[in-house]
Length: 254
Ligand SMILES: [Fe+2]
Image (cartoon, protein in one colour):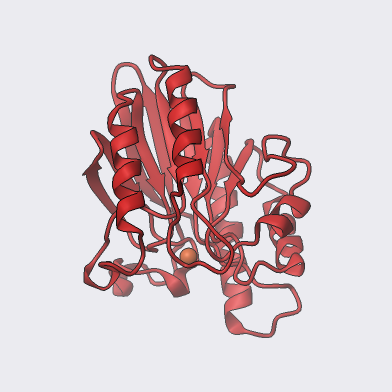
């Protein structure tokens, strides 16, 4: 099974006159063109899809996503607005029609996809409240033998010095770690939010961080080599190899 991951596109409205508006649109457009050439089974989008959570930004996002050929699975980041996202993507029947959280499971593939909503309105930190913990524990308990990929916007641990204590709620993060530790079928947790690449052993599985698709917000990449190149992730899963991931630079625009 081949999964492409995009994250942190921070799309602005078509009417925006900020230079970043066109740049970020081009980054997403190039990634989609490249993803289509890879023919993934699914594409996951780990949040911060737009910059301000505004309907006109989601309208622009939908235009840019239209050429994508593979099924798309979105979760919100702290820049998103759950109601506006739900309204803009009302054709995505996996998104709950009501309730506070946009999390869900996808059962259509050999690998089960579990999407956890870590956002809370007006909150920049990841939130893993008791209700979400209970939901995650319940869904992971349903199918303990089935390979599972967990995806979430906020990694539930510190990343780099300036994240310590600022981007997480320690007790909630510890509780989430304990839950995932009890479910050995979780092959990996795929995250966004930090805008930089990284991997970390976490909760008995692998946590994978990806750079922002928006190159103007990206961190941790050699800027002299790759300043203009948008990057996305390809995750290949098989019984023989487990999870094999690569960061792929989208080909230059034609
Ligand atoms: Fe972001």
